[in-house]
Length: 211
Image (cartoon, rainbow, N blue to C red; front, side):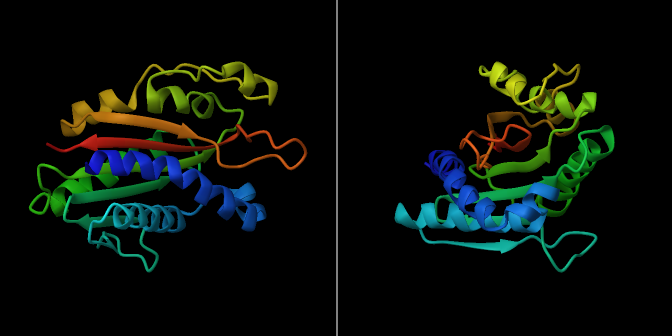
């Protein structure tokens, strides 16, 4: 049940992001969404979806180290279980940013192992502006394990995607003994000229069942 609600929330979040991106387009166009705003907006979406399905729920920021005033990781708790939301704004797709994501998972496991229940879910949530660098153009394949079916649409917008030698799923399994159950890539920005999705801006989701 919780998994179904989470996946539905990921899909519904695209409409939220579309509205948010239109309202704050210059900022998002230049930098993408901050980790705080990405995590907060998705936590609110998931809480709304849970409430619509009749579940009592609440969301709150995780206490993380180092402490920041604008939290970038949240938990959404309900009578159906807890979703742990860890975000990473990937300014770069290089090894430093990828390793930062793994460090976030490591810290979360260390700090909250006592609170994680078998039916809980972990959501890794990231966004990125695709650049000309090789690692950036490998990011979608690294995250999902596949290139998009509509890869020609990316090429038409000047985005040539590459395959990656490493995979997020394999790294998570090797480092933390967890494996993504569901991954998704979305593009919540549209071009004003023709309403085509902006392929250079990507949001990435990875759901892990913790049982």
